[in-house]
Amino acid sequence: MKRIPAHSASATKAHELVSSLQGRFVTGLEKLAAALGSKQHFSPVEWFRDEGLHGGGVRYETADGDLFGRGSVNVSQVHYDDMDGKKLGSASAISTIIHPKNPLAPSVHIHISWTEMKSGGGYWRMMADLNPSNENPQHTTQFFDAMKSVALTQYDEAVAQGNRYFFIPALDRHRGVAHFYLENYKTGDADADYALAKAVGEASIDAYLDILSQALNSPEKPTPEQQAAQLAYHTLYFFQVLTLDRGTTTGLLVHNQNDVGIMGSLPAYVDRELLSSWIGRMNSPQDKLLEALIAALPETSPALVDESSKQKLAKVVRSHYRSFPEAIDMQASGNIIPSTVKNHS
Figure: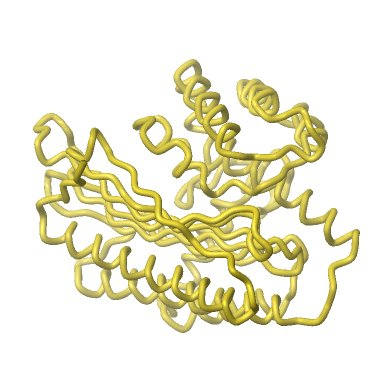
């Protein structure tokens, strides 16, 4: 089986960029692991869209190791060059999430993508956010400074969009502490836009690798309270991704050929009882979604989110939005301020 790439030159260039970012990140993570004496590594897993006719991707993943509980660095390119009825030409992306095992080391999420329309033109989506379960303010400042150093002109708007996107109305709080997000980004200068996407991707990867190295080389040992805070935060992360994240939901609704990969951002363990305590805070019909997500998890404490669970959770999300398509409007957006966010700004 072979993945057929998109035809356009801009899609090819975008795919080369996200692939180079993937290599930069995986190499950096494995180099750090080796320096720490760990044998944990990232294994490639290839997937195909319509048996490769419309592209696919490769993700490098790891799980249940001494350094990383979960980690996925996914690059994909999906296209519809042979389908005249499709408005979308292609989408090329890197989407990565790393969940360290040590609760004093933050998780990170980075997404860089180029979406191209058949009518001409396209736009970038650039997202980088630091997600500690036990915040280190110095790490937060370092991550923000890295974003500011490569996107000073766009920085204020990107932080504002990120703060809107990662706000969780039902819990009256954000996911993560440092949010940078440019949604549907394009200017009249395609080369400058490409350069910005490249700079944001490289700066966020490099900053995180340095922050991760600091945390994992620190002699400080996590306390039981910090371990508990990590489980609670991973539960919140799970909640945000599966009830609010537009990218995850869209990916699951478009096709079912990479469910495990799309769910690669989920942490290893979550607290079912904590999730259940949030059902009453959800508006209808999202309360039904949360109930179904909890039912799809193993009845253990804490609940392991393995590949089998991910497949079940993907089916739950897909079924919910097919039954309640209007609920898509309740998902997060960087460019739209929901009333719940306005009330807390």
